[in-house]
Length: 267
Image (cartoon, rainbow, N blue to C red):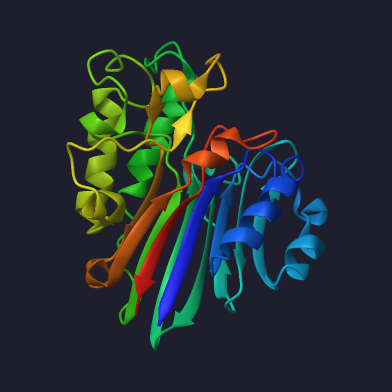
């Protein structure tokens, strides 16, 4: 039985609703996980998404910042949110669904970007990011007996050398500094998570999911980073059939600086 799950930092779901609708109509994933929805729950565009065949929606939002949502054709249950770092930000949501005879826990994350200066003594945003990643180390892929796990989201860290356009030039740039990359690798290792994108496309091949708005011609410069991730518990690894990074979406009308990434499973 086929299963498709997409993760996409949409950078304001209401502003970019037309391209969300375009994506859902054209590609029809079973589940779409959004980050940076930037709206409170009571103004989230439920009706247009339900009209497209996605009646099962769980959301965790706040006004103007952050926000995560799971939009699904498949019924969702046991949803909850975790307040990482205890500051009240809406950066995590989780739910359970059934597919192919399996119970699967799906986590959707929006990790703090961390500001511009990779020094927590002068940049509290960077300290917040490191603390958030530290708390993520407690999240285990096998936390619930008999339940498989998938973790997706904008994790705002490109952990491997070939996850950025220039490893050497970005070593002191937030999202690819050693303290961040080693931290995220520890989250994976301690939690027993599989990096499905790199299972499907091993290094040294480059993978990018984000291109800066600051680039005059993002496609020609192609200075990307892999900030968006799809992980799973080890039992789902053999069932992965494909990972697609929809690069063309970066050139759509009023785009996000991130593009949709979709995992295709056969369960």
